[in-house]
Image 1 (cartoon, rainbow, N blue to C red):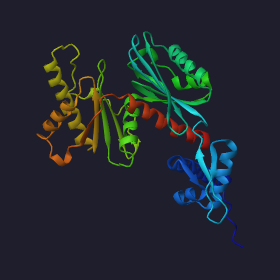
Image 2 (cartoon, rainbow, N blue to C red):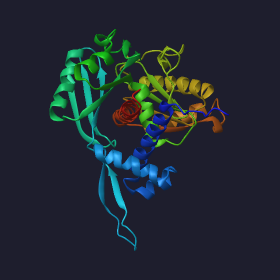
Image 3 (cartoon, one colour):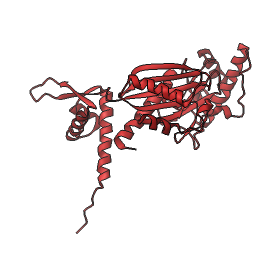
Image 4 (spheres, rainbow, N blue to C red):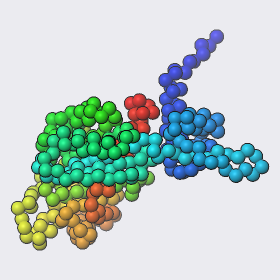
Length: 344
């Protein structure tokens, strides 16, 4: 007799977890839906959808909204995702040890902005960051995850290098997680910013996109997203374009015309490198000395070297704040949902 194959319990459990993720993400995108709507969009059976919806209703993650009008049969229940099921805190720090801003945005479980808190600091330490988070947590009791963006290299939750040197060497993910007892995700500023721009503007694009930022006090940075994934590199060093051999500094110059020329020259070299290496479809550019006119001049310069079919679509961003927070919240929300459902 042929021995019956037994399906491991964890395989069945993982399939259920995957289906839960599929149902919740579908419900968020539909805003309001019946069991039949969700079944049609996910391809899952009505029975499977019903079981998952009942389970999520009992937990309070989704809400039974109302009954659809009957057309002769039994009226269908309609569901919505409970945006208050939990909240997430997106934070980034921009500046130096002695001056800068801690920018926070409170996000609902369905990725909507609830509140924003910006704090100007004069001495940034991990204790100052903890105090900022605690102040927000005191106002909002259901924060279950924190996403933190830093201007530096973060590996395995530890800060290897950072423009804010007071944070270097800290196992910051572990510290914050232990202090607040919640899920914590920490990453690089440009990776988050590029990811946020991608998710909002290029979500269904598989071609590479890049995001260049020229801050007023620090070196130019670049974030890259390919096929929807951040390109971090083998040692988390991808995007450190200030290390390219042609890069130089204009920090001591006060001549506006000279600054514009130097910025354009720097951008030309950086974008030329990106075009030759990853051939991006879109490059977003932001910075204090950047304008729409600068981008138009950049395109003209690149046409001297490249055929027009290789020139990416350039997008001017007057500030990185929205893209940065979008990236932190989108990435951390994905990670936290995976963590709480799959326990990974």
